[in-house]
Image 1 (cartoon, rainbow, N blue to C red):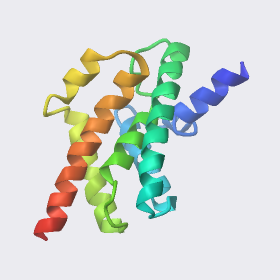
Image 2 (image 1 turned 120 degrees about the horizontal axis):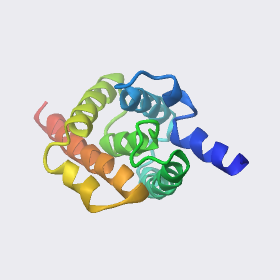
Image 3 (image 1 turned 135 degrees about the horizontal axis):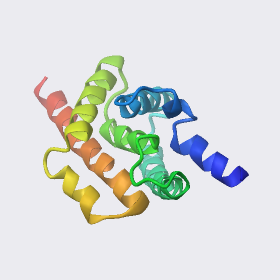
Amino acid sequence: MLRNKIILFIATGFNISYYAPQPGKGTVGTLIAMIIYFLLPVNPSFYWIFLIIFTIFAIFISGEAEKIIGEEDSPLIVIDEFAGYFFTMAFIPKSFFMAMIGFFLFRIFDGTKIFHIKKIEEKFKGGVAVVLDDVVAGIVSNLILHFYRLVF
């Protein structure tokens, strides 16, 4: 069915996660998000609207992809990494250096699920569970990036 193919194409980072190693699909998804981040306008008003709309979109796509794949929080679904990374880089000046620090921070917090991030996945179901833990990891990473900017 065409609808399912489109959903999976988007959820899997344009089919990239099918070819990425396991583990490592989330890392590849985050790299794609970093490229997209550099293509986004710098305008803060746009970014807020984009974050909200993209997060809602990612929740929907992730939930539908879970149903199609038949697995909760399948590693093939990487659109959640996009949302998390976009939150990581919210209102951070665009530079390769900051993007790389954001990349590593997000991968650490998303991968380790510290600060009770794992409990978010356990409390919710479907697309919300898939995306929300990444958003929280992104927010924690973002706070650290802003603190880093203040200190250095």
